[in-house]
Figure 1 (cartoon, each protein chain N blue to C red):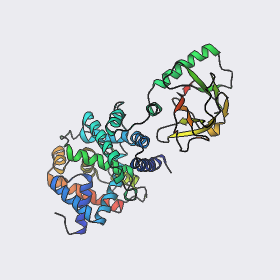
Figure 2: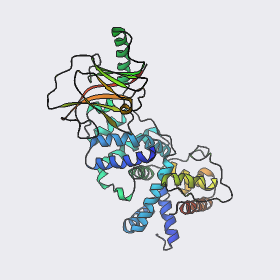
Figure 3: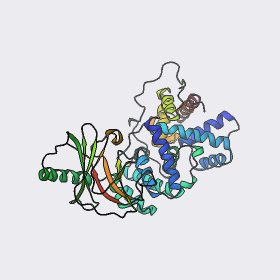
Figure 4: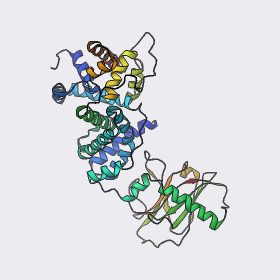
Length: 226
Length: 184
């Protein structure tokens, strides 16, 4: 039963949001909240504040199969490479292996003290490196083609992206001309960390209309510390 | 803006994009919010399998009902946690657990004589943390058991081996203290 006393009402809302009322009692409170705007607002304030207590918990590691099950159940078709963009140590491993192969084949890199390198590969073709990225100790990034690049249609652009962390989302590093080296200054690159993801995508002329890639991934790889 | 506020705003933007059927936004929302939600679900169920199941069900519900989210009424994060908590509280009653199980805030010392003092912080989430800190331990603990474990008054009383009436009185006094401290 909903009390008439305002102070008791406020306490009832606090108890309800905390989950202390169940069954019929909870249903009655919910009905009241649906009708009383002020009471509903009070409940919303409590919920907002309780987020602070939830944030005291250390985030848990997500089980690898959970997203797949969720995507299947909701019928969401996120392109397969988005999953790779988000996780999978495959890229790190493949990048490291290819780096070793490249160093053996090309010899030590002579550019000013690179501290990170990335081998960009075509998705699903781990044995075929397409581009190499080196980040030198002054933070400048050099993107170098390793193979003859496909001749993309003139009405498309190739865009270069990085993903520092999932919370921030992908960030564009600009457009790339197929087959041509490119140096990006440290200020534009920002900090690079081990495991950071880089990719080249095929976009509409002038680049993606969104602040994230919209076209297919041409090459992708993760930063490996040297 | 600190990282946490940035994330909070990002979650709201992503949830609104979910309401427009943007699957990529849904995946990003999952990556952003699911790790801490899973931690909360594990606390509430005490069972990793049930926690995963509840998290999955909650996100299915989020995808299907994202159009019901109203940003003017609160943040996406508060909406998500409320969905998860009420789902678990209503569908699953966690068995009483050892009183000794640690809860966030357990190691906070009791406040000085002026107990439920107010925090002047405008940040609602931080304010709650500060206000919880300001509560006496015997009031704070049963409240945290209700929040993190989803316990009823009866379960709290049983777990702490304290009479039901005493627990009700402590929780209500603690909630009144929080209410004053948070200026609700």
